[in-house]
Length: 31
Image (cartoon, helix red, strand yellow):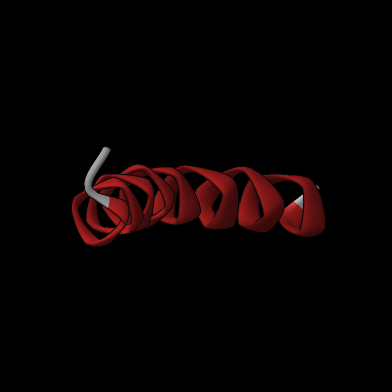
């Protein structure tokens, strides 16, 4: 198990999730 690789994959998941969450938050805030 390559820990560095795993961390990179987690970072990628987080990076793709954060904008979605941000958009959701903005939508709620603007209502």
